[in-house]
Amino acid sequence: MTRVLITGFEPFGGESVNPSWQAAALVAAEPPAGLTVTAVRLPCVFGESVAALRRAVRESGPDLVVCVGQAGGRAGVTVERVAVNVDDARIADNAGAAPVDEPVVPGGPAAYFSTLPIKACVAAMREAGVPA
Image (cartoon, rainbow, N blue to C red):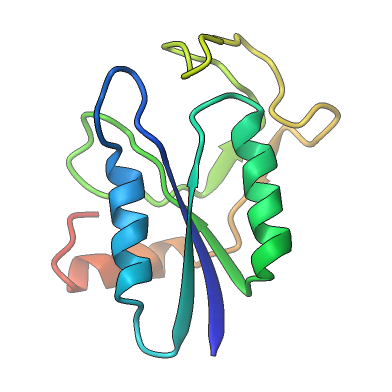
């Protein structure tokens, strides 16, 4: 059985819900065959979310980690190929911080690349009727 950790975020920016957490919780409640899924809700606070993710990985020992976020205004699911190692807030987080051009991981690489087969993920979602 493959162990999956899926994360979403708590509400922020004055919203009462965060669709990323709703999606993660739904997947964990009814996992696909062959998977055991643990969902973790991350705080919308710069620095704290990374620490909470690292804790969740240590505690659950997953084979796969899928981090889900919200990108307001997008009409479909976007699978990210690259995560740039920069915090640059458009709005303040839930603790009031709004960093500009600060590294997420000081001393880390400029970017992190996903190891997921991005195009296959998008094709599978489209085949299932999910806009992606």
